[in-house]
Length: 461
Image (cartoon, rainbow, N blue to C red):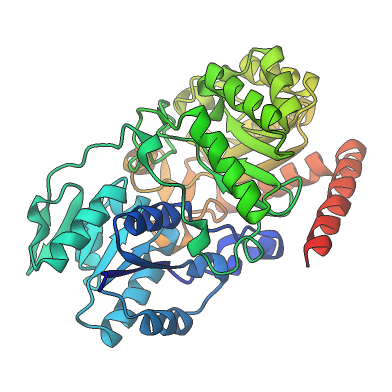
């Protein structure tokens, strides 16, 4: 009989993740679970994926799914704000299935492995970084009643001692991996949708076409995939898109790469492939402003279905950008957004309030800057010093950090730089939204997008 592996996320409701924006928040599945599930299945294991976060499941419902599946191993993936919920789920499952080992993974564990195992004794094992090879090797070792001390990328508790296996090698040939196991999800894609204005057509889902980010922004945690960028080949990406189009009727793709535009010849090949295969897909991606200087490439992207590029702008104050190690300038931001608009592609800007050096004056400057840019949409987040990021280790030199993992979700104020208050950060965040959106051009655009979104949602009901 094949060894059975149950993969899940912790119950973490949309209300907890998005607050008042919960009704329009994302319910897309965890790509991490899908990648692990695909690799385990190809290795011959029996796999069940239940994405409790995306499906809005309760603890008892996850426990019932585990009971029904009767796994030999349980894997749980969690982000920093859901780590305690993952621990709660783990302890519940331990009481019901005491002999089934529980494996923890994800960015929080990778950033703080030893402390996580010490804080949450219901986790038996953990996987650092990329998990495809490690979880296969760990499962095989446990099935053979072998301690996994020689399994790369694995950390575990042996009595009161925390044991680290050898460092794992990153996966260089990403094309050797199977497509994410979308067909192991319950009711995909109908039960999983992006946030309301993150897609152009439905059904929509996200994919990744590269791993790793070469940049050094102090607020990012690159502990899972590292700083060396590895790419899926253009043909692999096109085959994956065609697989989603043919098997699940996906009409819109969201590229979740940290920096989709970093390798321009690859972007060009993907765009030409979309057009040649006539998949009739709309798609969006994220990019850095210093990668955008070629209008002809942007026009090719537009022709192939690209409707929006998301840019991490962060601030309109050069000194804050410099402190954040963005390696971008206000001039580069303005040029990139101007070229994007010329190509007929919408731009969304991501901003962060509360970086060290932030003042009321710099926040007001950022609002004015955003209003003069040709942006179609913005998101304004609060600086969240996640474990694993550079800012986490130095934050308290420049302000006050609330080390409550459950509140670290980029929406709550958990960090206040010197000279500001929580109330002022919230005040300027609200002011940003009001001043940006309450303009005739933006209001009309949003009304039209809302009608289109509503039509797509009703059409698919």
